[in-house]
Length: 370
Image 1 (spheres, rainbow, N blue to C red):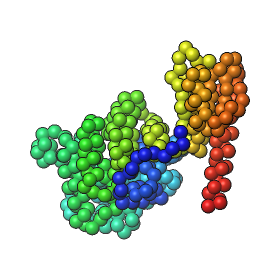
Image 2: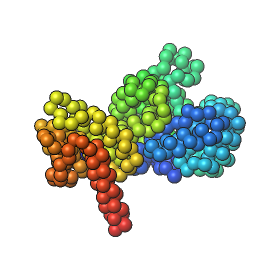
Image 3: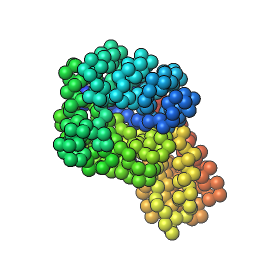
Image 4: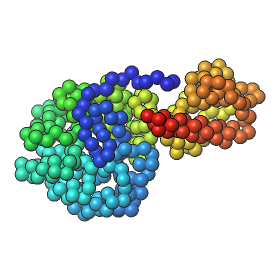
C-alpha cells in the first residue's frame, strides 16, 4: 500500500496563486467555489473557512458587481486561503479586486471589450504579480464559433481558448492558467488532451455542471480520472450541485486514490457480506464521520471476515479483521490486540488516533533532522 503513483505528470510552467504553487512539480491543488451571496460577507467568510478546514487549497468567489467587489475586499481581510475572483465583462471590477488583494483573476480577456481595457487589466495583474485564469466553457462559446462548429466540440473549445491565449501572448503576459470545461466527459477530456500539447501553462481541470452529489461525483471521477492518469492537470475543481465542502472531499478522495496526494485516513474496507463478524457498513460510516479531522496520512483497513482480512490488514498502518468471538487488530503488519463487539468503534477510533499521532511525530522528527 505504500508505493508511489506511477503517473508521470505533464511538464508545465509554475505560477503562484497567493502562496499556493500551481504547475511545475507542485502538488495538484484542490479548488472549490462559494455559493453564498458575495455581498453577505459573514456568510461567505464562514463558508470559505469551512472549505479551508475541509482541505481546499484555493477558493473562487463570484464578483458580479462593484458592490460585490467591495464586499470581496472585506472577505479578503478575514481569510487566509488564496482567493480567485470570478469576473465577467466589466474590467473595472477586475481592477478593483486587484487593489483589494485578490490572488487570481478568473477572466477571459476576449470578453473584456476594447483593447485598452484588456491592457489595463493585464498591466494591473503584471504590476501586482496576479495570475489570470482563462476559463473556457462549452455553454458560453463565442457566437462565431457556435456558428462555425454548429455545436460545442473539443476543437471549438480549444480554438476559443487559443484566442484568449494569443491576446495575453501579444501583451507579453504568461502568468496564467487555463481551463476548458464541458459537462460532457468526452468533450472535456478531448479538449484538455489537445490543449495540453499546445501550451505549457498550468491546466485547471473540471467537468462543469456535473450534477448532484452522486452523479456529479461519478462523472467528475471518470473525466478527471482519465486526465489525471494521463498526467494532465495542475489544479482541480469537482463541480457538484451540493455543499461545496463535498467538492473538496471528493477532490481529495480522487487524488488520494491515484496516489497524487495524501491527507487523512485512507480507508480500505470490504463491502460486507454474510461472512462478516461485525457490521462493516455501520462501522465505516461512524469512523469516516469521526475521523475527518485527522490530516496525517494513514492507511486503515476494515475487513469483516478472516478470508481477506489478514492479507489486507498486514499491508496497512492499522487493520481490523473480523473474527469469532473477537476481532483482531494489526498494527504495522503485526497482530496487536483483540477487540470485542460492544465498544468496537470507540476502541478502534482511539487506536487509529494514536497511530496517526505517532506517524505525525515521526514525520516531524524526520523534518527536524533534515
